[in-house]
Image (cartoon, rainbow, N blue to C red; front, side, top):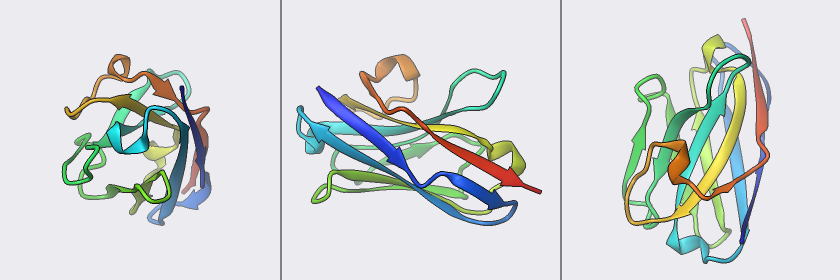
Length: 125
């Protein structure tokens, strides 16, 4: 089983930046995992934010965050990061880290097997 723990959430001003982290432990090995980020705002469904391939060379993003958010991974630390720049009020949500053993870049939440508990991002305007 893979355990995922997110951190780095908090309060950020609109236009500011925030970096979320997700630490993975357990098996399968981190290097075999596609890592994704999702978010869920109150009253809304969970939505895809972005994902990074297991080799770190490919990534994909939701249109709403493209050009503002960036995902990276550090396999030596078993961590994946979500760098959030030019944060907007509509980015406020609980952000979840997710993982699945896959060579593909999945965007659907039901494609992921492992989930963290989430970290809250609040945006002040």
